[in-house]
Image (cartoon, rainbow, N blue to C red; front, side, top):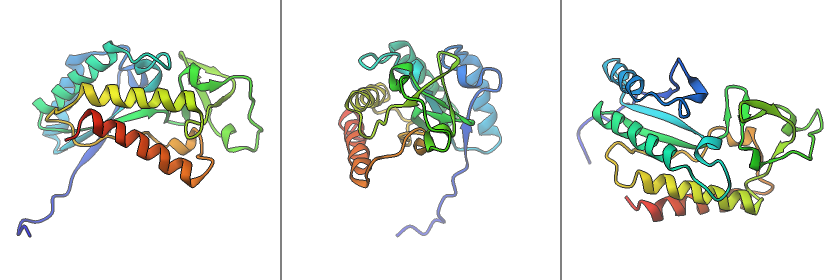
Length: 201
């Protein structure tokens, strides 16, 4: 057992102040480098970034190479500033709305005003759209797409020294709720297995 005191991590959720949710599309690598240098100077050792789902995966069977390349450059900036990186997949819910790819929304269904699905608006392609998020804990097409995205992202950062952990999503229950406990466990196992198969370390 180590005699050293346990390390207290100091991390931050990162969105650039200038571009916020659109930062992946309007990517400014120099801004990220400056921000990460400021974070390190301020005493932070960890940074959590959010992968805007519709940008990284514009269709169920396609993960953007441009987006993955930008993710690697963000990881490089974290490494260069001695910051540990936590990428968050399937964002998903953020700042009071659900940012869901259009292909993962059932536009034919309108939620009842009192239902959990009605709590948050859905934004896709920079506009509020009708419908509800397809339940990725039970929808086969969305589940397969998520597995594809998780694997591609893990492969892009395989072995990267800045990578500290993967977060499977931000406040997923604000987007959809697993129909059963078993469905939730199966979803977690499926995605974590895919990530580990792409990057065992």
